[in-house]
Image (cartoon, rainbow, N blue to C red; front, side):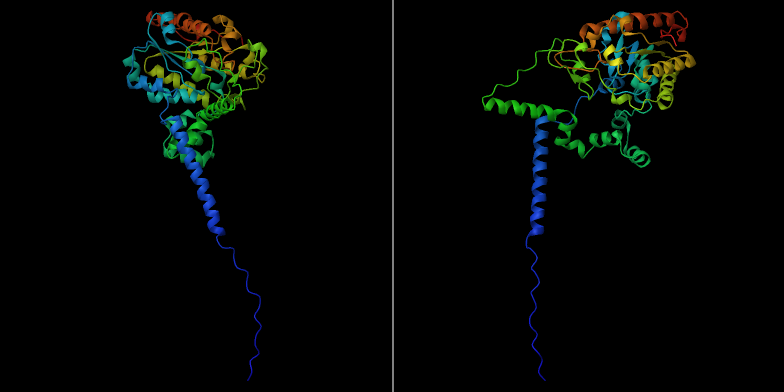
Length: 389
C-alpha cells in the first residue's frame, strides 16, 4: 500500500526573539533612572529630619518653661512674638501655634501635649486660643493630625471608612518607605522648584546669558514669617506692586471651600475649652484680623457664620471672645504684604504689625484677664468684644 506523501504546510511564524527581554530591560532601565534620581535628590536635600511647626509644642511638652500665658492657634498666630505678649501682660508667655487649621487639630494637640502636669509645671494661668475662619470649617481636614497622631490602625480605619484623602497621603509621606525617598522629599518640601530654578540659572550663566537678578534682601530677619509663607496659598507680588491694592483680588481659599459650621469643629472647640478649665486654667478666644484684600474673598457669609459660632460657644461656656477688627490693633493692609517675598493677605508679615498685634494681645487681653482672675473677679463672656449680631 502506498501512502501519499503529504506536502509540508507553511511553517508557523517564529515568535520574535528577545521581545520580552527587551521590555524587561526598558523597565529595569526606568527603575534604575528613578533610583539614581531618588538618591541624587536625597544627597541634595540632606537628611529627612526636618523642622516642623509642631516642634515648639513638642519641645514645650517635653520640657515646660515658665509661661503664665500660652498662645495656641493656627498659622496666623505663628508670627506673633511671645516676648511682646509677655511685655504687654507683665508676665511670661510662650507661643505654641502651628501650621494648619481646624479646632480639631488644636484640641487634639492640647489633649496630648498640654496635660495638667505640663500646665502646672509651666505655671500657666491663661490660654489664648487663636481663631480664624478656617478653624470652624467642618469640611476642613488638617493633615497634621494624621502625621503627628495616627498609628497604622488609624490609617487603615480611615482608608476603609472614608477612602483615600489628604490625611492618608500625609501619613504615607511621613512614614517609610516614602519617608526614605529623596524624590518624595523634594516634591513635598517645595525643593523641586528651587532645584530647577538654580539649574536654569547655572545653564544661563554657562551660555553667557544674563541671569535674573536675585531678589532684594528682605527687611525682615530670617524667621518664622518665611516658614509661614511657605504654603500653597502664598503668592508672589507682581512686578512693581507696592501694596495689596496693586494685586488682583484673591479667590476663596481652598481651606474655606464647602464652608460648614456647627459640627466637629464646634465640638472640638468645646472639648478644648473644657480640657483647660479642668486643669484650672482660664481661656479666651482671640480672632486674628485679616486684610481688607483677603476679607473680600469671603462673599458667602463665611465671616458671619464664623463669628456666630464663636459667640454661641462663648455664651454657652461663659468664656470671653475677642473679634476685633484690624484697625483696633493699629494694623493696615501693608502689614500683610511683602514686596520681596510671598504674601497671602491673612498672615501678618510686616514687622511693625507683628509687634503691635503681639503687644495688644498682652496688654489689652491677657493683662486684664489675669488681673481680674487674681482678684477673684469673673472673666467670662461679659468681657467679650464682638461685632453687633
